[in-house]
Amino acid sequence: MQKIDYPPEVRALVSQLKRLPGIGARSAERMAVWVLQDRGGFAEDCARILGEAAERISACATCGFYLSQGNACAVCDASGREVNTICVVEQPTDVLPLERSGAFSGLYHVLGGRLAPLDNIGPEDLRIAELDARITSGASGETAVREVILALSADVEGEATANYLAELLSPRGISVTRLAQGLPAGGGLEHADALTLARALGGRRAL
Ligand SMILES: [Zn+2]
Image 1 (cartoon, rainbow, N blue to C red):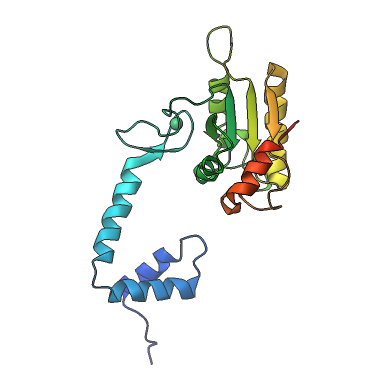
Image 2 (cartoon, helix red, strand yellow):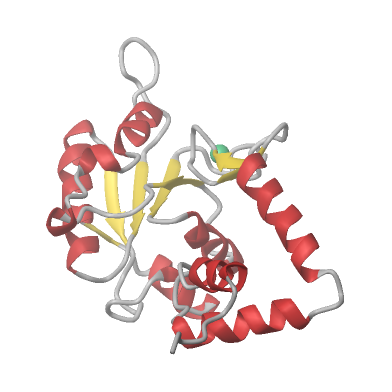
């Protein structure tokens, strides 16, 4: 006797939903059932919005934050910011928690991850050359940047990334600082509340 399974369209929907971070087989199935039962136009709206986001959103060539096609970068274009301080973060999602803390008014640079030799993620896989280029400007290599704040995760890989960047930037006369402890060990910036982030920024230390 042949075993009963969902039609191929439902199976395809479940297997796509399962690819989302934090979504297991059971959750994917529940979400698929909800989508199929919905009569409010979710599937059509979601398909359109997903397509538009994937097509129109890219990374800003300078800072690495999300950039909407045809628009200026919200991070780089903000006037009145301190141009001599760059805060380095791992992911675009780390920028907004720092902004909400109200403790930082400089520029941002998104690395796109952190050094992880075990996963074969080296310096060339991150936006380190772009950071270098931002700091080195003009033929003589003069720079407006005086301080680079490393707002990286408080774990082994974050530590390794911070040390690498400190070795790269410190010899060039740039003050390299790192967020003070106060962030949860092993936790990303997106989980920290505004007060914790503000204190961590206030207590940053030189490397
Ligand atoms: Zn930008």
